[in-house]
Image (tube, rainbow, N blue to C red):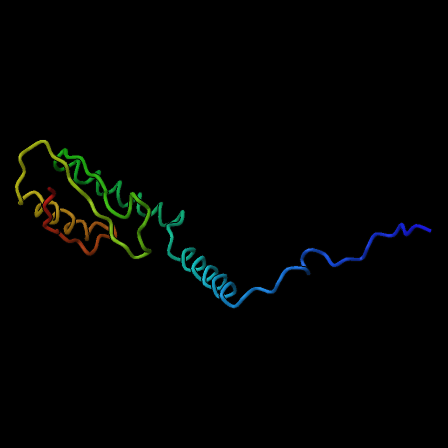
Length: 129
């Protein structure tokens, strides 16, 4: 007589070796890293807020100087932290000196009273080679 019942061998899940301690630690570390990334990575709201700030600063400086304003650094690369700053470069057609940067800072400082959330304005003297 032939046995027609399927064999009752354990499923492949039960045949796997238990994870080694190193593998378990690695999986734990990956899970924690993913949790951290979810907290600090840019999200839709932070993108919208930063875009609003960038558009505001671009419009403000363009109205005063007719200059192009370009964000650079972590914001366009989308590698900023939740409390990170926004770096700007102002491109002009004129041979502008250091007074332009100081004037831009003064304009932004004066905007603190306009109802906009303007704060922590810094002029960082950097040379591009």
